[in-house]
Image (tube, rainbow, N blue to C red; front, top):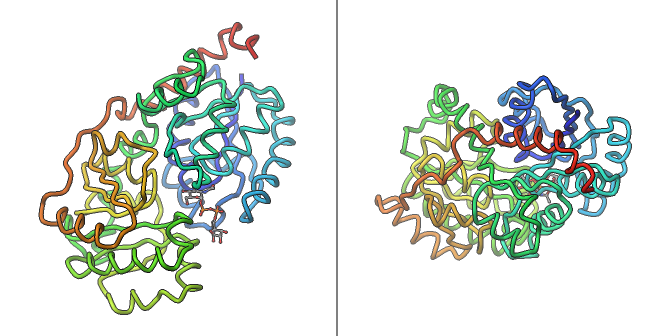
Length: 372
Ligand code: UD1
């Protein structure tokens, strides 16, 4: 029996690595790894394969960037050929990027069982492309592998069959727990000239934040305020770098030398940076979860989160994009009143194993196959 994994964009790699490892330990299952090429810069892709111990993909489709329709459609055309030639018994997709929805559509039309890892997350905002990807992928999936109980509740509310839902925990945290010690031994802080807990980290890449110069300018002014209190290390996503240049926003950095843009980092380098930070400011989804697992205060620069458990139980505070509100929340966090939290259940480093168990059970159960 064969499982075919799809990866494409940066946040996919740390989710697939633990599943790949857990399946590799089972002789009854074969697996194939396909990279769509949605992300193609070495710093957005290659370095993650070496950092996470992922093998070179069996096929790389080289799709690259484009509008949503162009990118998704190009992936679908290529993936159809790939699925027909490999004949997998399960197609496994992770997260909520365009590679996820493209593979989901193609697999379900070929009647190949589809598994979605990180199912059930909802921001309830259809303005986010990821929300559309989540809803459609979940609707089409035969196996819905969820990170937390709120995700199960979302799926049940949408009328999805409970027999398809499997609470397996947060697989990205498997990668974090495997790598944390190794990451912290790297000389990353030394290279940047900062001390443990003596700096903040910022990341921004959501179109709603970085494509609109008014929003982006407000965010940079709030970050400049934080940088007046301690160094802010800002690994800049290619999309954001392009927008800063096009919108002529470079002056914020010139006026605030402590607001320090750096190139995107590899998985271990970045984990080393976040795990020892005093505060994280971000619009990323994954980083909200990683900071909760690390116990590092996080301010989410968005109006809503699809990961409410990081607020209910973890260290995350959703503060929106209003510069005054961000400044206020950052001041509070830096004066030691940052949000404390606990690590949610099943974020324990064993999710990859649980997913492999679900796959093995599904493939052994002939009734599951005839259900399709
Ligand atoms: C994608 C995901 C987003 C995820 C993010 C993580 C979708 C809809 N969005 O957004 O959910 O949080 O990845 O990074 O799938 N670019 C490069 N080099 C690269 C990749 C991209 O320069 O290796 C630039 C290109 O100008 C491209 C732009 O970034 O047009 C956007 O890339 P794209 O893959 O469309 O979306 P992301 O913004 O990266």
